[in-house]
Amino acid sequence: EAGVAQSPRYKIIEKRQSVAFWCNPISGHATLYWYQQILGQGPKLLIQFQNNGVVDDSQLPKDRFSAERLKGVDSTLKIQPAKLEDSAVYLCASSLGPGTGFGQYFGPGTRLTVT
Amino acid sequence: GEDVEQSLFLSVREGDSSVINCTYTDSSSTYLYWYKQEPGAGLQLLTYIFSNMDMKQDQRLTVLLNKKDKHLSLRIADTQTGDSAIYFCAETYNNNDMRFGAGTRLTVKP
Image (tube, rainbow over all chains, first blue to last red; front, side, top):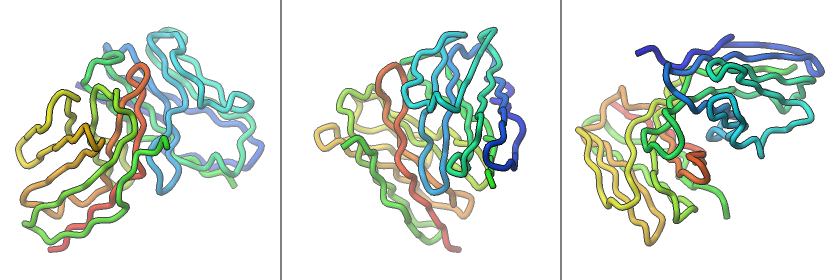
């Protein structure tokens, strides 16, 4: 079974530029998550999708971050404009559904450096 | 508070047992998880425990849950150098949202 795929793996941009990350979840997983992991910290949830609907985006900085999952499969996360403090690893995860107890399965992440 | 707390570092010798501790916050968490993160990689699900259990064993891994104290631990028996990584505990809240600790960096010395 293929895992969660993410691209790109690394991205370096200047502040005020825009960037987009892509995620393809495990086949059949209805729930998709985006996390931000700052160096030395655990992942922090940004947004959760159930199929193509947003379940929780309470911690997404909506003035600069946006995410979509148009067909209920792939998802993109965008930052526009980027700030220095956005430097982090952005992790995508998927699960069969909420409350399944099977946990979330993570992709390798995209390491973003904002200079 | 709302923080899941873990000690930041643990160092053991190869062949010894490792015990990584975690204090969580949400007494209504249905599941509690342990994840492993190796350098440059995403998080790998190691094991989980349902909240009505006290203990779960899975090969070299033993998870203990004390709901009264909201304390979770992960014991790794016969720790190997390949076990060196950062270990995160996570609690669930809302609709399978997860709250992670800051991670415990396990170093295994030969």
